[in-house]
Image (cartoon, rainbow over all chains, first blue to last red; front, side):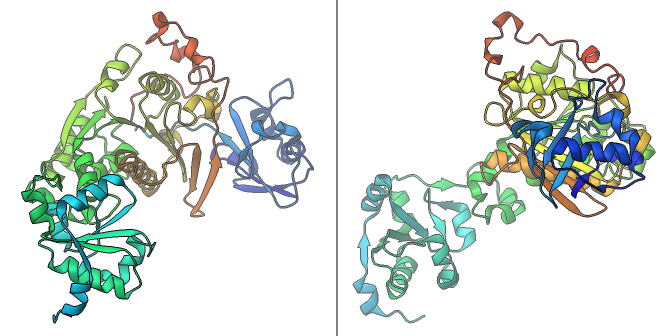
Length: 93
Length: 395
């Protein structure tokens, strides 16, 4: 099992959880496990073509999967997958 | 203190001009054996302060190599001679004391790093900075001469401005077109109840000038857009991005890459914050990290979702820390690193950010943009349509 770090904007879709355990041998499989457990996260992570949305960054531990093997990057037990969408808040009233 | 004259006589003494030649030649460890207040007044360039009372404790840090050529100086040559003898006893093999000290050095017209440009009041005010080897008088003078532009005088900008002003950053520009609202005061610590309704830039000026008269405040009471951003940014060394919307963040990024100005960028929401430092062509830019803004449902605002006030303070002070390091040229700024902070768990996570060779702004082919397109910005509002809504005030 890998640990998936859920960004604030997706936490309403995971019952408020900031971390979720998910199974999978590759990053894509881990994310698919997440979306099958919490279906509302799916549309925000993946486009209609099944590809990861471009505005969502995914890291395995501290490395961007774009510089690894993308969604095919192998995930070992206990590793952390971080989902990171851009945030703009500087906070106006 | 009784001086062991046999020891003192046994040490090597050199004239200031001989010391100057050796220092110019390099490979010399130069130790200033005076007190901190003397050091702050004036010292030899490259001289490391090791006060006599702390010699035994601090010399190993200042001069780790006992075989290296080590030259000591003080005011007139007495304390450095004693210190040289002590160093020989500690096993230093190649020590010399500069006779006549910094007084004779200056009499011979040799240069010193002096606290010129700093008034007695400033030396007092910044003494806790100048005591730090990483800052020193030189660093404080750099801070006093630095010009920093803050985008937003709100949740992030307020704590950033507070600490930059306290640190003596000489010019602080503030861009904001908003007025102080009661709902700001839970986190925007430079504003106050009595200034509700006042433009934030004016309120910030009152606070900053009250804290530190050394700081010149420049108010840009308006919005940044493609028509004015280059002109506004041109006068500043570093930009701090605390904008609350994506169009402004992308616009700022593109302008900063073109002007080659570093940007310290943070964002906050709820209990979460992110921060990174973008130095054009040295590390990635904002577009390398986020090539595309998210749709509106993934870009909620603090006004709709809330934000923990102290967390804005944490991220804002981290921004100030980055700015000060960039000005001093000290430490390791967050270049190529994105730091995430989660306040509920009190947890920091660091992610690597790499330059994107295909980045349209700073990538390998970005240099090919013709001169005629420089300064021409795409329609950010269309680019970011639906991402964070319309361009809002920046705070």
